[in-house]
Image 1 (tube, helix red, strand yellow):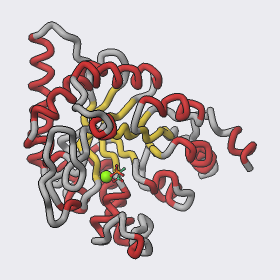
Image 2 (cartoon, rainbow, N blue to C red; image 1 turned 180 degrees about the vertical axis):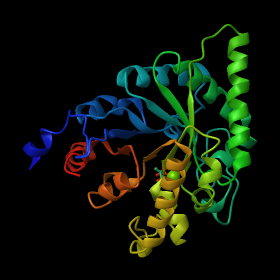
Image 3 (cartoon, protein in one colour; image 1 turned 90 degrees about the vertical axis):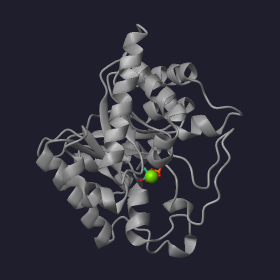
Length: 291
Ligand code: PEP
Ligand code: MG
């Protein structure tokens, strides 16, 4: 079985009807690059930048972030790397930032909500990503979006950062902008949001948690935390339809992207990128090729 899978590691898989599908990796650090390339990752569909912020004693500077992002982008060239802006808050503390105690951290001040309130965190990150986009194919996406105003504000910040870089005589590359669809609000408003972004990436972990009203870390609720529940499938289908009608790309970067039973359904709805833990990539490529 291992050998049979190994044969798929380095293929660029297509479905029987000829659709090319990107099978990419979810990464949290540059230390995982070589492993992901070894499993045949076609780029990075989700780079979780929060780990760069949580592990040190101080926050990483713009230059430190740029060096890391540039290395990742170069390593996966010509494939794209999607950097997700800092997805933190609620129960997770950052060095130098006192966590606010919240009754419901998963419903709290996290993700893009916190970042838009803290431009001194978000702007250096956006500047670093724009600079990395000049050395390879970088994309950016925002987590925990629930309202179109968040997207408008985030895009305005990107343009402000681009202008600053130009004024300083620094290079900023072309940058596709996307959002994670991981809240029911985003799925329900997907048709509107699709007009404002270049791509969607469905985060099935949080989309399941919020649709099912079941804490994803609570083992007692594991039977409810299923991306193949009809309620969650309806959210995913709705998101894919909105993407199709608006003519934008849709990928999946939650756990469901690597699940054998989910892959054919996702492809049927028009998903063109699946991003997952690197070790799951060869099996996913095999399933794509057999679909
Ligand atoms: C998700 O919510 O599905 C996701 C991919 O993001 P994270 O697991 O980092 O919340
Ligand atoms: Mg999430």
